[in-house]
Image (cartoon, rainbow, N blue to C red; front, side, top):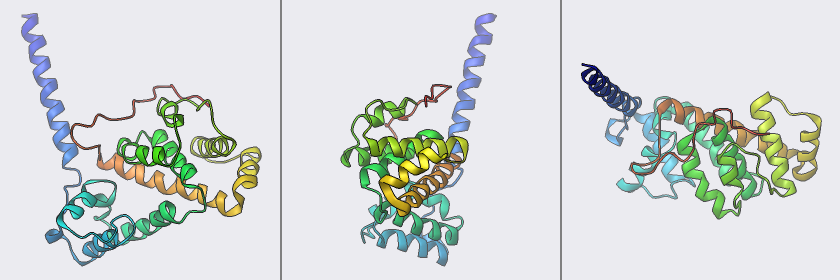
Length: 225
């Protein structure tokens, strides 16, 4: 009898898991171009024509754009989505921060929010930018042990901003000395924009492609300063 109850519990758990996965996939069904209204098509066209899309409007490029990142969710509020993607275009492609440090700030945000897709998308960009092994320690919730001065300044500024909602004089003045006033504001900007991205991805339950395991484990108190 006990074995029957155990088997029944396992079946119910599997069914619940399947239902949860199905519900997650249906939170924001992928909108196809033929389903979009004029404002949604305007947002899609802007994404494809901008630096993310590189002018490629092929069917494959359209599907790639809609199935990765926050853009399919943002289609539900296309005016907001267009404003956000314009901010993101500055943050990604025109920021005053060096690419290595900008990607570091993005990964810090992804780790703080355990945003699986964000980490999946930006980890290779960070590696290409020269961030090195810092990201591997960051993924574990640890303070990277071998940071350069500018990396430590970014880490301390961003971690303090995310966790305490403010930045003390020491962290501010260190960032100011290294990056200038524009750099400090751009550091705030990248943290804020990718917080919005991470919120969207987590609510929409956007995950890495099938077959790619989630890159981040829950921190469960493993954070270190």
